[in-house]
Length: 216
Image (tube, rainbow, N blue to C red; front, top):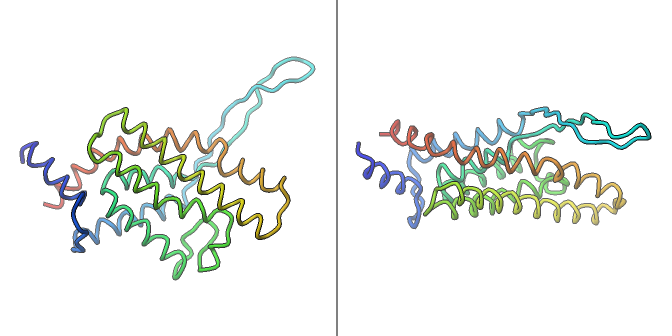
């Protein structure tokens, strides 16, 4: 298969400017993407880093750690791999499954999960998939990947923070608690989202070629 034909077929697979057609192949790919999100939800990485700390004896380095759940990189990977229509559908399936049938969110599942403080971050995956895939559809270079990654991460965390504040208002929580939750959800983790989100988008290109070739 020559490079030009492969590119045309990959563009067709992205379903850009075409209606989403439900076939066995698309169902398998979307099911695989939903499974990836679920796996990422229950995967944790414990990163250690050092920050300067001031004391009467001078400046010392204090070790801190961050537990990172790689959902955002997986979402960006899906967006770059299968485009906005397949990607958005996959995320929507994940959200609907979590709200109706299965405890596949970090804190469980069910319709009552909409009142959880972190649900805004999950909802934000939908516009993030659209933004990332839309920006990458014409140009897949380092600069465009960085822009898509940056806007995607900002979208998730801005929506997530506003939703968290809304839930805090509904539950009448203290401001100090809200500030702590925002720091925990959108503090150092944003840096990891930027870094690993960028790498995930880069990895999607060779994976896309292998996936398409394996599908015929």
